[in-house]
Length: 529
Image (cartoon, rainbow, N blue to C red; front, side, top):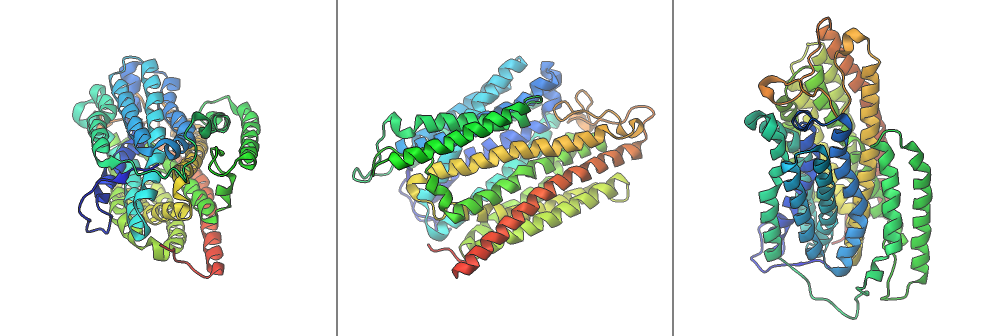
């Protein structure tokens, strides 16, 4: 069950009494959990130097967090639906904070990676509770505004991470700079936990409508099968040489689906049911919204990785420069997401189409700017301007998709539904990031030696070579390497990788158009309060 808001005056934004405080305490941990992915990208070279880590160690700094995050989402959402979202939300914050503390103080790569697993578990525990609590506390247009701010935080978490990481590395230095990319979460996480305990209150329960609260109600069989299936799907796209896991992954997920259907068929009213009700996927708004958001997030992180590598390795600039390139997008997401959220009930399905189309326009602009910057015809800031177009695209897409996805989901299943949607996003992100970076580095590796320079893989790219101010890798071509040819090699690799991104986003646009057509045939494009 979700917490009710603590009493307080009604806010000017139209939130219920205490709603603004509830939303604040929900969105701060969300921001930290998302920033923990993007901020680490620029710190990897400093981590490698500071801990004498191998490329495999660095790969697990990212992969461990992603895996543990994705595996527990659905089970955590179901547990919150059954036993109270406040308790799991606070527990998730504390686990996340503890993992961040140990990560920042780690003396070996092994300790760091174990701590990242713990951090991911905490993140996976708290994230589905956020969606469930928003569904319970906010109604109608207030829910749209809440999800508008939710979308703002998603955009900020992804875009601000590289900028903040670059600032920490430049200001504190590499040795403690990378540690503070983790330690910065500790005081904020502790404050968020205290405020959650004070401001979130559990709702009154209706015994006549309650489902059983025993451990059996969690559907341990379904939870175990889904966790194993998700893990087996994600690992091959993170750990090289494990592609054979995809076959058993498909079998396990098929077994999970059959299991859930069987549990559903045997369940009785107010008795234990499946962890994920198969009827959830019969809700068109949930299915289309999940598909659209998952396809967008599948390759969106890849765009930022390409930008960071092109900036640092291709152009020889600093991590701070790479972070600053994300600033216009972050600002526009921050400004526009609440505006879109306030209007999503009237134009949400249309916003999805507009956002999907604009994202493709932005992608084309990024491709053009990469080429002309590499040729030294355009200044570097034009890349930031092109990436800035992704800000309004993301504001339209993610805010609308979140509201539309959850609009018809019963409140009692909101945590589970949020977990399912976020799991789809995590799985496709792992697949998309592997595809985008794999294509990028494959093309770079195939460039002539004189143009390629000191190209490295995504984990250890440019380690040990610092850009201006010591803020990050700047894989400047070695002796005998043509600078212009080097830059063009990276631009060409980026163009090929962006084709993978475009394919994903064309599918996203198609799904958004199908949903718009479905709603138009139904006679209404607006949402009922």
